[in-house]
Image 1 (spheres, helix red, strand yellow):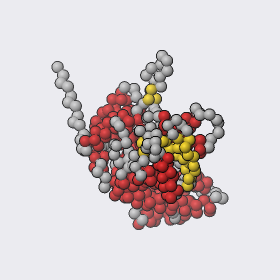
Image 2 (spheres, rainbow, N blue to C red):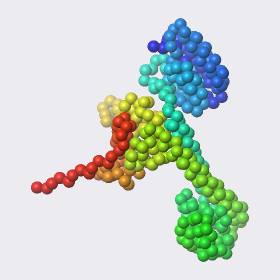
Image 3 (tube, one colour):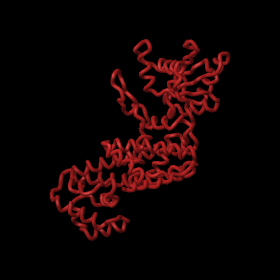
Image 4 (cartoon, one colour):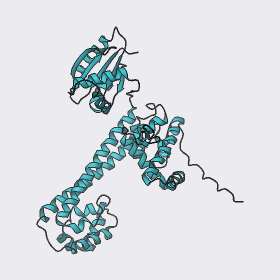
Length: 402
């Protein structure tokens, strides 16, 4: 049993470490750089402090990001490390004396919470494939956000000088419309080239439905005869944004190929892909969020709780059965399970039957999907535990009538 507790208030450039003994007395309070040599010196110092008392229990409020180097060094020295979410530290600070907030105080609270609490989870390292996929899927989400922002800027700019063309297409899905904007983004240019030549120009660049896109664009040009003063600068910006979105789409294709390549190496890849609703990206995201295995979860209920799919009670006095969604959960994991459940309605009769039954019970669309996602967590847990692929259950036999 550890008798020395080291709390780390982790940061980007520096960490603050406070070491407590069994009675809560401060043995060490030190700020260290987020550098390997400084962290190794800190680890050695704390281990020496605990040489006479027993093992060290480390605790930190970050389990990734700026604390990644510290976590790796502690794992290399076989040190026990607990994770205390920053939200818990924030609420626990209200129970300590004083209203001030410093890194030293936060580090002491982290160490003290690790000393008193028995429900904290250890930081477990993920396998290499899960780490790679986690980085790639996180980067993919950032790139998608950049794409959404670029499309919003493009539409806002088009509204300044050519609203008819702005409402003619869904630029988030229509590749031909983006190709069109790279060269023909003003009413005059579209009227001059005409439908026939514009369709041929789009077809030569591999665009689908070139005739329909050309017709819609030229019709929008004929609907606006007035040239607005913002047209010259606006059309230049729109062409630049269209090229930027096309480059982002190419980047997304490369990222998806990398995700597929890394995900295919994992031992659970085929199992997750056999589950209806899971494509390669969603399956890779799910794998990354659970750390590559079920080792971090004691039971399927714990996995559902982390995913935000297990309601928590909020009972008080005579009020019982008051269930709500938990406030602390992995939102990215919840989104993955929700989208996979939604997609499974298309090709899984059992998922569709369960969803329809929940809707018949009076559940809303969102409530029924969350219930379906919770049920699917049980299935995924069993598949990964038994290392077997999913098989769609046979439809129930229709009961005979008398």
